[in-house]
Image (tube, rainbow, N blue to C red; front, side, top):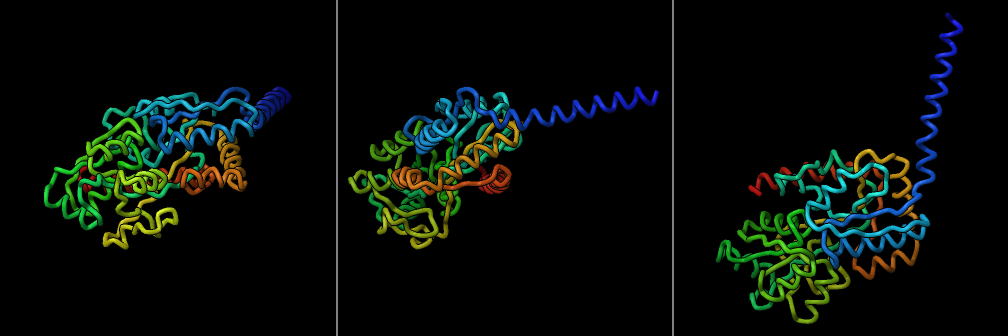
Length: 319
């Protein structure tokens, strides 16, 4: 009997060791096929541009095709949350992801529980821009006009779960004004809406704010950053303009929950290595964003903490 027991225990130990060794081996050989990066926003948005930059870079590193699939709206987020946790379906999204569950009562995935953070990719300074015909030259002008006509002024975004929607909603709360959100399919559409006066304001990334304001098509009012940005040195921060308001707009890579940690670590490390190159810095500079990197565990904490804090803020504001 003892001999049999020892044999059974020995077999069990061998099986356990074999199972342990399979996971690292599979992670080391990943990827062996095409990787898809889903973007829950339209083509031309900052999120989309960054996803294509990452896809090109990782495709070269991994020796596999990496494609970007635009699936605007919560449908894209849901598809990734329910995808197989094998590392072949990733998502590059904005920190609007942290409020996805709050802006949609029909969302069938949990922004925290159903996703694994990989790493932030970049942080993008945002500027409040307005329609020139609004006649606002300063932040005080904008706030005064909004208070004089509650509910009459609108702000655009690429959708409820976008980082620019969060910026607009938080600005609305901080300034204690009643401005109405109008969603569009993409960031370029949201900017065009301001130019056409379909809406009166938008939180634009620095490249769009610079291009359109220098062309006289919009007015760059204030930067939602701690310090002024060199690309628009004459535009004050919100704090300088009289309203203490700073907002960090990040973009990051995520995967369905359950992807092996070794694969997540590999992707994060490969991105961190890319950020060390002058070539990647130049590419990010051309998009007016700042490169960022995290460990998967650190990014998971950021997602969870920000989801909790923004949920509390939005509930207080009745959003």
